Length: 235
Image (cartoon, rainbow, N blue to C red; front, top):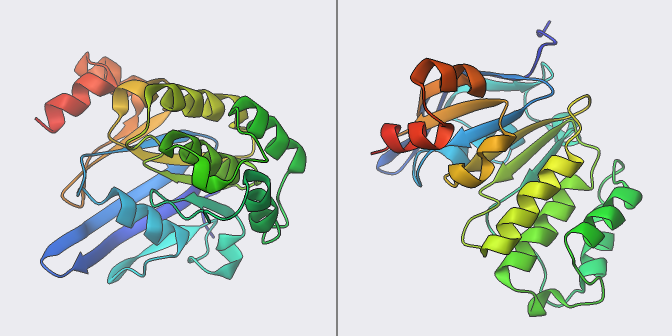
């Protein structure tokens, strides 16, 4: 029986692509009710790790469990995954997009969807094709946070977008995260803008865990902010 303290448990996880070990023996336990920062530069293995947890990539060896079960249809119902890649349909309006995606999930919260739309300053009548990259990123976050998921996986939600959208997305996470019901893993290299979110952090380097633990304990131990530690680790 799995330890109820942890929502995700990972042991000996390996994934190799031609010419590169994307994940090279990952061991992790993700505590419930926290926001975890999954930190590292491009190519460190962040996206592959999230996709393994989401059940979208099959590892070569090792194991991932969510609530004690391997990734499957059962676990997917408990996981909301927001990929870095833009998966929105240009011909739909914002509202049509949300109506279409919500039909796939029994845990969709319509009231939360409307709150997030308003907070993100998204016009539901606008076509997706007319949205800026920052506005599209805001819409993707609405999709991810409108579900009542136990586990939310955000893959580089701030990548390549304007400062105002970055601020709005971070604030949206602060407002909507429910620690009594949810756990979140947020992968990013924009540590300065997201540092205040983290309860715990994982520093990945070349597919391996370099540092992991409580964000506050690491700040005290190293006498550095997470952003300063990030710069030191990846200098």
